[in-house]
Amino acid sequence: MVFAISASPKQHAAPSAQRSRLQRGLSALALLACLSALAPSTQAGEVLADEAPSTALGRPVKFTVYLPDAYKTGDSRYPVVYLLHGAGGDENEWRTKGGAVETLDGLIKRGLMRPSVVVMPTAGPASWWADGAAEKAGTAIMNDLLPYIEARYRVQKERSGRAIGGLSMGGYGALNLSLRYPDKFCSAAVISPAIYDPLPPETSAARRTPQFTRNGQFDAETWKALNYPAALDSYRANPHRVPMWIVSGDHDYLGIAPMSANLYWRLYQIQPKQVELRVIDGDHEWLVFRDALPDALQYVDRQCWAVK
Image 1 (tube, rainbow, N blue to C red):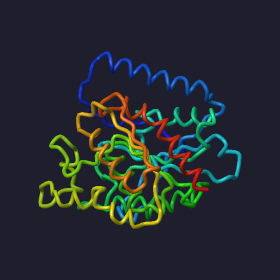
Image 2: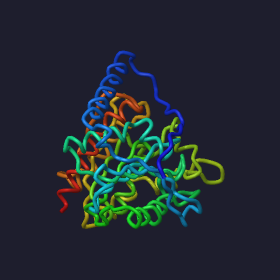
Image 3: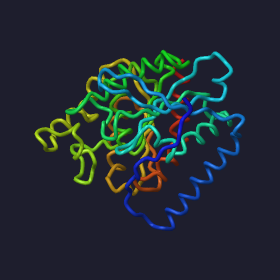
């Protein structure tokens, strides 16, 4: 079924300098325009809507899927990237706000990324992509969505053909799923990840989601048990390493830049040659997420290609 445009909730971001915002906005628009110009509609990917039945959730996992231009005419299997949205978002958000389709078309057209299938799912606006107190969103992705994609679409089924990425809540999800299932993913892109350690700030949506709530109150122990530090020991003991691209805005009002630096240093102790950190100009906002996406996609593609 061909994808139909729908609105998604507005992303909150703290104010930053008007001139800086304008400059970054113009830069992002210029990048998207350049990528679009290099990827004419006759050689553009196709975007569809689909849903995977989910026993874990008791409802379907809806997703948008990007199919590269060559998918229509060939029979090859393609690398697949799972791109996770942030809190309050849905399966449309990366396409409508993040310029994902234009970015993918441009990168593939210019030979900066292999033709790939990109799956943009949702398990709900506040799933945190985890097996939390309310529902098993992590299990839904791993046990329901991945097998459905690999059965229905021509994607590579080997670890070397499967990457994951996400922004904010989706960055939290991409990191945690790759640390807990390192045998499943060849690389991860962690964009402005909401990985507060030890606890989320009062302004974070994490404190209001049922996934981290017990008896009607935010539960610190549930948060700690599901956040990435709890997975590091088992990850270190696993023979697989997932190369990580970590990026954050320097003015992120949720304090994610220092959290990202701390994550980088912890992973550097485990895999010094397989982790990268970038801090770019901006807040916790779509200007940063859009700017970060091209480099993130190129990194995971290179790392996964190297696994072969």
